[in-house]
Image (cartoon, rainbow, N blue to C red):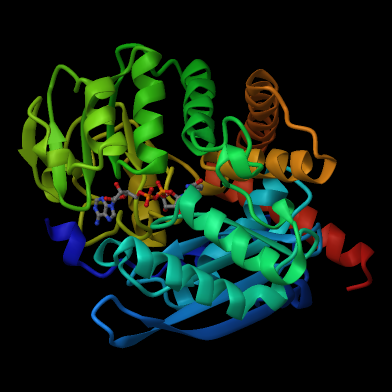
Length: 419
Ligand code: NAD
């Protein structure tokens, strides 16, 4: 599929560009703009790994701490061939704004290894994770920097990361979130990002009378975020008419059988396109489908001027992925009357429940599933309401409003610390 080979628009430049409108709205001082654009600390490491065929391959890894004024740095680890410095910095910056917007006491960080995890054996994946962890471990700690899963990583990778860190530092479950439950993970964490996206969509649906029940949904990406979101929306009565993964997409006008597709593609790891209950479609065709809700849930930079901004035919773009929309595409969509619900609001459910996991680890007191879901809904509702208020009061985009709230909070913390 075309989307697979095209290099994504650089996440770093998307995120920097989004900063300026919001900084103007809150009259941010010049020195503060500088401080908040640059990372606090940025580390590049080589990751040499003996492959199954006996060769040593050297991968490149990054851990970037963007800002820690409001708390320890927090952010996922991405394994992807495009996870270079620019991409990881953009994602680390996004984490600073996201944690501030939903008001959890963290700063922003991100990690990445430039590797295609699908091309590695399980042993090689473990070796990459252990070498990468040991080389960035000086930066990590429950009160310093706490990784989590992102694209290409999962609970098992977090378990290896925990084990490698604990060899030097002793039992430290709070150093990483998104762990398996039996190693101190939180109930509800695995589906938390998808659940948060669904909560934001339900709130917007109530405000703007766009239906979820019988509403039509298209989702790019059927991994942790996309698959759980599809499952939850299906449970709310939505018609998920198309989804895709890295190998291609699937379409069914009456709605796909999401529980069966979830078992086929998410649980059993088969390509979405091999599921029998729908027609195969290309990436191009997916973006042009008429729907109520269009949800990018894979890579950054996928909605852009040259590719699809003019052909997208939905009422709302819901940014489940990080930085999926380029600044120019953002303007085109606004001119076309298509609302974009921004990533830092919409996909914050993951970091919110990561925060709950960290709290449970520090207190050594696990929460019930009900408590996790109830407190997630409360935090998402509060953040959604504060952004909506600013959108209405200032007639700005949802993205500018969300950024403005976040920037103001981080700037206040910096000022109080004496900067
Ligand atoms: P994942 O690795 O579990 O799944 C990624 C999915 O995207 C897979 O189905 C993959 O096949 C698909 N994909 C990859 N390249 C594609 C392409 N070119 N076209 C179509 N599909 C493609 O990753 P994830 O954790 O679900 O993350 C998805 C997005 O959500 C990322 O942007 C990530 O940063 C963001 N996000 C994730 C979390 C989280 O908790 N996992 C939290 C916030 C934001």
